[in-house]
Image (tube, rainbow, N blue to C red):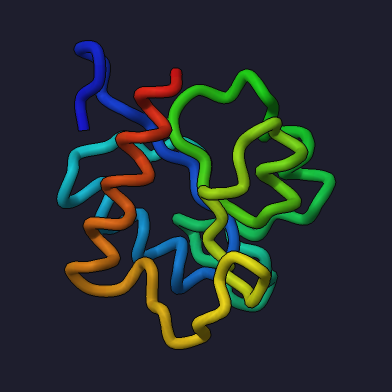
Length: 123
């Protein structure tokens, strides 16, 4: 994804499987640059996706972070970002369908692209 002649960057943190999937699509399929990546479980970290505790992501993720940030609502809130970029889609008043796989398959790819384009157009 090239926006204003600059290749877009993406930072993703949370569940290791979700982080891997989003990164693979964003970087391999769309050519985005990987910025910060982390998982939220020490037992599942890899040499590519490190475990970050709360103190670490608070230090690294700030409101002036450029590019796309996808993570938990807590991280997004702390970074001053909208909560529509959350990767852990729980049940709430806006998302009642537990079977709605918003980031899986073709529909998921379309949802991610739509979110990312909307995010880039706002900045």
